[in-house]
Image 1 (tube, rainbow, N blue to C red):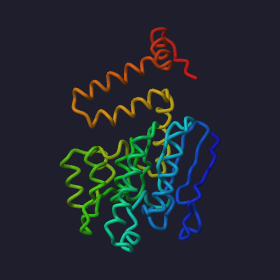
Image 2: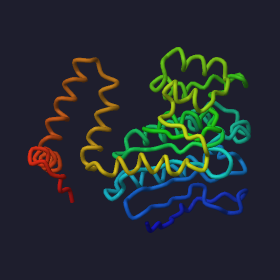
Image 3: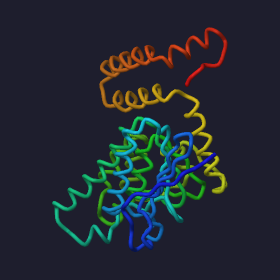
Image 4: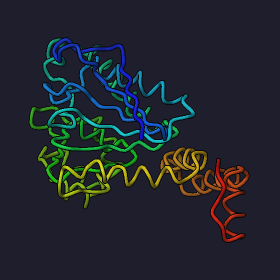
Length: 274
């Protein structure tokens, strides 16, 4: 399988001029974005958030993209926001812009028409844990650890709370938020933060690929319609949710891929999707 690599123009002098986000794409349309500040445990600086936003914006209009995998370089997924950078400019306006920038990235992940899979190893803390929670799917190695630990510094992780409270049960999310304690990968799976955990870190890529292959076997149009509806209906009262779902599935059924899929089922053959 041929793989091509692309990079953003944003580079980090502290990482030897390496791109802040590495972008790789294979021939199937699988895109991997790797947070690339390994010496800083992939802390989400303004610049890294900007580089990630640029990549997500490009993907939003890319009809050839099928799946996005989000990963971290080095020994961690992401330690969260860059605290040194945050402390250097203690003003309300600055913090509003910073967390607004981060929230825009999170919303962009939801709005992408393709599934987003977090590939997690090492720690995923604070906004790094938020990033995992905001991805559509997550696969973790058994040595991964998760926390929203800002409260241990006197900073309640308010923006991560949005993603956590929509993935975990309320009590499980609130416990993480008020204790700041790290949980294991297995605990994260049992609480709904990740989908799968692999015992051997070396098999993490294979576990991600298993999910990717399953998604690629389905029509892109159906996945895109379904993802948009999935998040939209979750914020609606049940009657409005069913109305939205009814409209979506009716439109989906009129799509050529669905018509072919149903006909193939009737004919007892494999669908002939382009």
